[in-house]
Structure formats: C-alpha cells, structure tokens
Length: 234
Image (tube, rainbow, N blue to C red; front, side, top):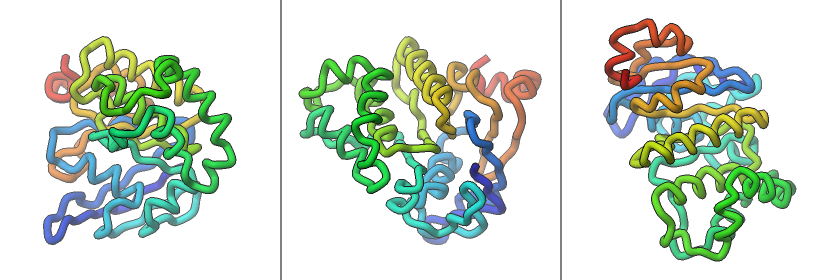
C-alpha cells in the first residue's frame, strides 16, 4: 500500500528525516516508536503532504504521491490525525464530524461513514449537539479519530493517539484502532512507549535522531532489552 524510499525531510535548513525507507502492506497496523523531537510527527506529515521540503519517493498503491498536497491525498484515502486534535472548539460534535467529510470522495459516503463512526464511538452519538470545547481530553481524542474516519480513509496516519490519556482511555484507544483495522483500514501510528498500542502492531519501527534504528515484529522487539526498557515500558 505505502512504499517509502530514501525519504528526507527538512524544516528550513534543519535536516529532520534522514533516508527513511519503509513498506506498509494493506491491512497492517504499523507502529513507530521513538523519543520526542526525533522526527516521528514529521514522518507522518511527510507521507500526508503536510511537509513542503522533502526528497525521496513515496508511493501509494503503486502510484507516486511524492510532492502531492494534503487535500489531494485525503481524496485518495490518506488521512492524518494530528496529535493536538485540531478540532473546531466552538462547533458541535456533529459539525466537526461533517467537516471530516469535506472531500468529494468522502461526501459520497458520508451517511455510511457517520453510522460507522457512531457504532465505533457510541458516546459521540449521544453528544452530537455538544460543543467540542466542552469535551474531556479522552472524548476529544475520540472525536479527532472519528472525524478522520469521516474522510473515507483507507490509510490512517495517527499521531500520538494516547498522549495525555489515563490508562483506561489508552486501552479504549487501542481497542478502537484494532477495530478500525479489522474493518480493513491500514493504520500507521506513532507513539512514545505505549504497550497497549504496540501490542496491535504487525510491524514495529524505532526512529531516533531522524533515522530508523529498529525494524521488526513485536516479538523481535520484545527480545531486545534496549527496546523493552526504553520504548516498550517493560
């Protein structure tokens, strides 16, 4: 589904990502771990057309998407869910969800996707008229993921979905990602050290100082003492 070769990304003259190569197969959950400030968010944004200064090759279903903007990529089924949620605080839950279906492709499936979102997030169905600004951190995170699904995404890039959440809500986020994947959506998640998310992974990567320092299965990661202690919280 996604093939990345020698991806480099820059903010002005700062070289953030350094020759990243990765393949994400259809139907996988891929998790990228790593410390803060080492390029994880930049990696997601580069795939999703949100970083202007990049080099290398990115292909989606065999087609080069290198250099394409975010709006075109969303219409193709590639959606980025930001760490800071980027909700519209003075709009209701339902209004935020409808805004997720702004692309031409998504509008054609908006009713179907709204029902899917409500089945995944029953709490959102109960709170369609509630302003996003009045939601708890966990509820806002659920709304951000739900709005991403309204784009009719086939590939979700989710940035730190468990950040700042209590352990029970981390479990809930992990459950939802598992169900989203079961429904056929490929998922790329970046996290710091959340075992609940790591357990879902078909493949794990570690990004340190802009470079991939580990690639393998979760079983291989569990056999690596450095990864277990630093990134898997074990």
